[in-house]
Image (cartoon, rainbow, N blue to C red; front, side):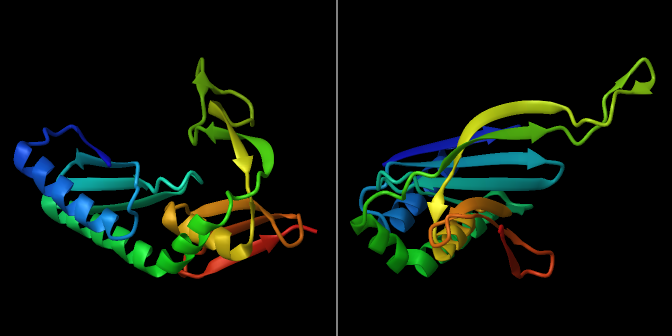
Length: 189
């Protein structure tokens, strides 16, 4: 498995790299014998270290498991993120191994994902129009998933929301985390 460790605004020393590699290999190989890659990214902002972990499971279905955390200690931020990752993997272990035996997730609908700036653009001390400013555009796909598959994908990839085509009804659905911790599900008609 390829392990990539990077840092933003910080230098990653050899001791931290060895610690991360050993812990990641142990944790990931417990759930995926053929994981392709793991990316661990550290950043520092003010007095907080943030650790983001992304694992590509190697099944050919492009499942990526993501986890993140922040702490005042860089080792603690990694340990907390790894603990979250292991919890997700334990929770979905049977479903992930079940899916390894099945064929790939069915193709969905081609779509375009836009990233919109939350800030208003001013020109000559005047706000330009009511239209949001698009800062990025990327082709994506709205996958054909069951409700359980969509919930698992949203949880494993650490998404706040997910748009998908319901495999049972062929309608576009949205699931998202509410502020109270529950999950909402919107089904189009």
